[in-house]
Image: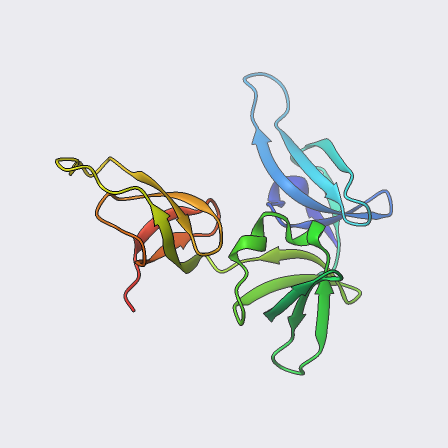
Length: 188
């Protein structure tokens, strides 16, 4: 299916020279003079090679037919990350290259959206928010009540993040999975 280059976003899958690529970043550049262009940074799905391509915004690109479905994360082993389709209970294994930075945010039973092409996982989309427990943090300093001050903390998934000074170890917090930033205290 042909689409205009400027409509591609992060996570889109394109067919370039007969190989599948996932878009890592897409930027539309409008210079003062000249033709606007779309800069695509892509990773080849088969072997992980990264390339950068520049298209005029009106050029068309072949978009691959990808099936996006919800899967439940089961476990990780030497083979990769195992997911189950909750509709028919089929299992799918995704390689660590596909999961990438999302690995620490995968917890038992969490639901993610996997993009598949010919029954092979090619991309993952995490839920926007996730809840984790603060395992370790520095004690708060007396008088440090400014809302803009944060202190470092280590969460139960091993990720380091910055949290407000009033939160201590054992508190469950909600974080944004895109960058691991603190959002709010969990309401459970």
